[in-house]
Image (cartoon, rainbow, N blue to C red; front, side, top):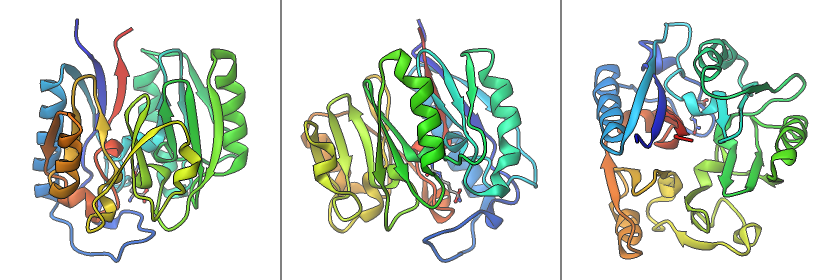
Length: 257
Ligand code: CIR
């Protein structure tokens, strides 16, 4: 049985016009970004995922960051209302793809949330309150998730774009964190691995069933993960990083049920 489905979305020709919050704009090589994205999709195939690749347009510079548009659980999926108004065009196609696989719930105004602010570890869901995500959305999500046994908690995000810029899940009880951007005490009960101090952007890792998909740009932190016995598959991600994106952002992972 395949591990599941990964929904991805094309790199827009307009990626250079992406939203930026904490980074200075630098030129992005769109062709290189597309080549790196193909490697990312190939790594997902090798991990057992069937790729559903959505197309993009010039009106959606950030479309490759499909993670922000939905949050997928085994029982249902939530279509977000992205915090950046420029990104709300992205929701229709993602909802169209997801509706074939999960019952959908939609976040309504005045709620705003980017999927990058939602960290799921087993039945615990952390919602980062950031420049993109607000309490209205967190309350709406909690209402949908609580009947399925999820516990939803809000976490304040500072100094970085999304909660998952600062912390991601390596297993249901192990997290990768940048302690400069998130209070370790929030995650009491979890084992934590810290990023290498020279790699502040390294806390974003994509957990798959038997491996971690990880940017090749962070060798020191990758070595820490491997020392803990994790299998790390490195993918080039330099161009999405210039657009303030990373590895979790470029897919929606739907486990086989
Ligand atoms: C944005 O600012 O919305 C995009 N340039 C980057 C989004 C990255 N997404 C993510 O970390 N989940």
